[in-house]
Amino acid sequence: MPETFTVFINGQPVTAGPETSVAALLLRERMVNRRSCAGQLRAAFCGMGICMECRVTIDSDAHGLGCMTFCRPNMKITTL
Ligand code: FES
Image 1: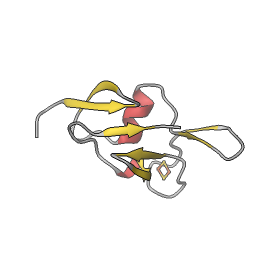
Image 2: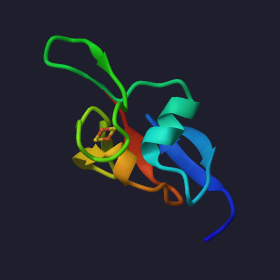
Image 3: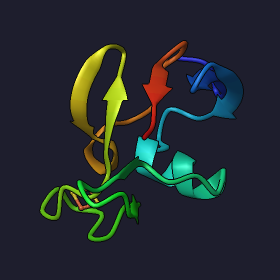
């Protein structure tokens, strides 16, 4: 796997590395993961697969845990 590669967050290209989690990438890019049922902005909290606050759509799979998923080349991440 290349040292760095491109992933897409809401269609925008971003450089990432193979040991970067989706949640870490979103924090680096100062983005939130989703909205709660009440409309509040939500982002990663626990970073270890327990709180479910980091859910995003990853390559068309809804509710993927960003903190438990490493970036891959050409991955498509959809927030909110
Ligand atoms: S940050 Fe808590 S489950 Fe991902």
